Length: 412
Image 1 (cartoon, rainbow, N blue to C red):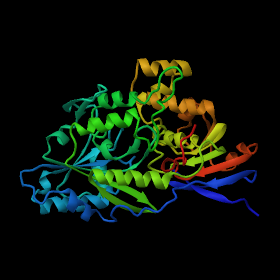
Image 2: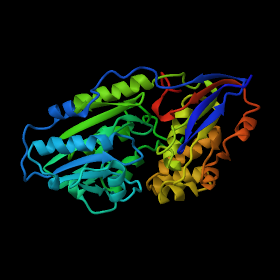
Image 3: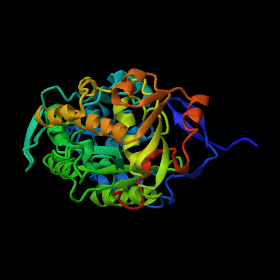
Image 4: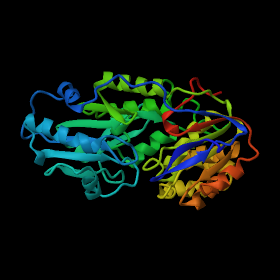
């Protein structure tokens, strides 16, 4: 009798992971059904949009880039038509891609992928371009937003609410900050994710589903409020279907739904944790793929083995992250991350820390040189994975969508 397998996403493929018999396995997936919100965008817009705008108004839709899944293609025609009915012509409507500090495809590529309505302009945010200054947060984070966003008379954000290993949740205020904000502002905010040295590592208040006491999340909320959108729509995906939530109340409901359905499995309880992000586009590069390891580690006992299936065709994900990975000494990395902070220093600190505390097997990376620099062992999918786990026994967890789950209670 053949050993059972679990299908995992790896880039554009689906691969089978064999559940080795010496391990007592659990498959950890989002548990509860999602009944909150609306299955359709149109009724949410009726409550979020004013009854009438004018033909001289300029409207901006803020939508996520490809690393943040959301129903952009099906939502754009609904948004465009809703604004047209309220008096705003397509020539005065702009889709602004909230790329944050990510590298993103050109606007034409987004237009092709989304089959954007004719006559609507698509602009990709460039965090390095000059913007409009809106002040500072109490923590001193400078808030400078995209000029198209700042000058529009009506702004609406469409963002997927999800667990985020640093900011608590994706979507919501992150669509504005750092989604359409400056690189300097994003860097100042992300630096707050570093904990005190010693002991080093990430701030203890940062974690998926955590807002209270989270210095990154609180700073983001304050920054976004300095130039808040006039309307916001949140989306949550479950079992292949999207649900739409509107406004501040909807953000709270969406976050609670994501937290509730994703709270499964036991913290610090497993001797082996196998994780995937679900495939492309979430495992596009090492920066994005690291998030699955961060979630997986919350389930793992000290010294447990972590296995990550992630394709990373985009390599490290950013030049600054590549530079931080090149710092060989953990102590030097921790010190320089605080004294000479640049974007993704905290990602390198987190990733290298995970690889020191656990044996990390990284399966299927198309850029294995970056995996090795992080301290992980690169493997091809297939028999080598089973052979590498031959000596592992005890309790095991498989996380097919690792960034969508978090242990039922905080680890540690």
